[in-house]
Length: 290
Image (tube, rainbow, N blue to C red; front, side):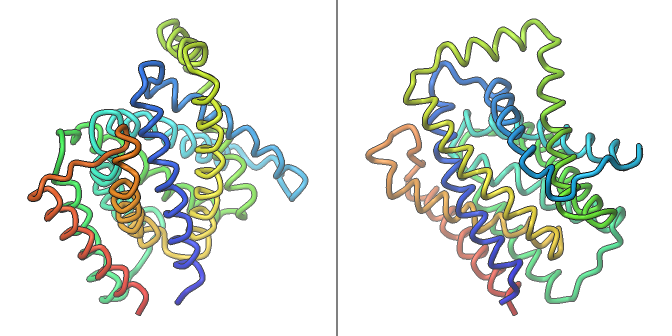
């Protein structure tokens, strides 16, 4: 098993846990998608710890690509959180990622010149079929999925491009600067500013604690994803999102009765679609490991 595939699976388990915490928090009246994405970006400022490890000021083209990559990730988060707020966490994440996987594939071919073995293409197709079937349940969030998926796909491929242009530390650091900068730019708009600070004042202490836990777990998960992207194939790493949805589905079914806010739709026909999709995801991942 390739080390970057193993890293990717661990990363997506961690992000699955973070997604379920996000679903719980977004179910509250004080949490709005824009505000939630803003505070996520604020915590990304912790990236300053990378400065002693070889961060340098790159040329203008590199900075522009990094800032665009980080900004598209921020706006992708807003669409993702809108979807999570509207429907099951596994459904929302899945639908966003159907588009993300597809566009990461397209962008990686045109921007990175990636090529794939026939087995990779077959496995990629099986994983996408499973993701689509998993997502064909719940309330319609295809508009959020379409825009969020395009933005995430572009952000991931441009991140890989930055890794190829310099190194991991600078690619990670400068895209997070772009992520943080896009969030700060939202403060220019009065309505966004009111929403952001209202979300902070209206959140109880326990919710703030859970938010910190979620972002800590997600931060480790996204760092591991970036490492996997740096070491491996960006489209295949993105396709491993199917494992994340399987993790979300299982965890939500286990804990949903005790925590109604994260409960999944357990109607028989819905479960059949979800588990059928999960089975396709597992098959696709097994093919990727060969």
